[in-house]
Length: 106
Image 1: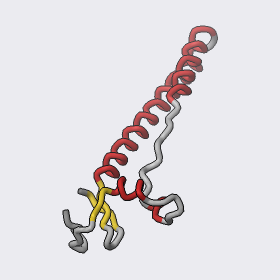
Image 2 (image 1 turned 45 degrees about the vertical axis):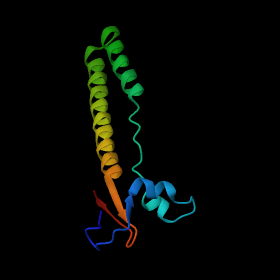
Image 3 (image 1 turned 90 degrees about the horizontal axis):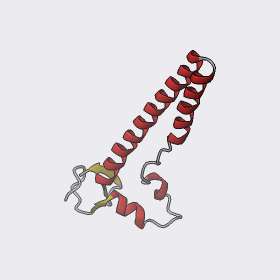
Image 4 (image 1 turned 180 degrees about the vertical axis):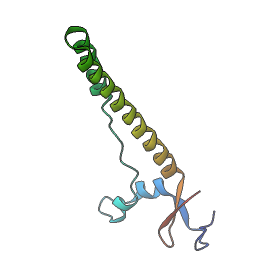
């Protein structure tokens, strides 16, 4: 495969290049994979359960408010995980030109 910018054939998968870098390399942070998200779905479930408990024992509107807030929080978390997975798959498919150190899609 050739680099589309400079025509060099000295290209490598970006993930493999990053894994082979020593820990003290300045490029280690620049070419690192995307940070993993932690949406804390256990907290979402606790909020929904608390909302159901409040709705059953005390105030229905306040309990439903907690349930809706938990559902929105969960939906945002699912969106973050989906965006992370797309970014990670793009990263895994990327190549790096070792002649000029720029990345491009395979």
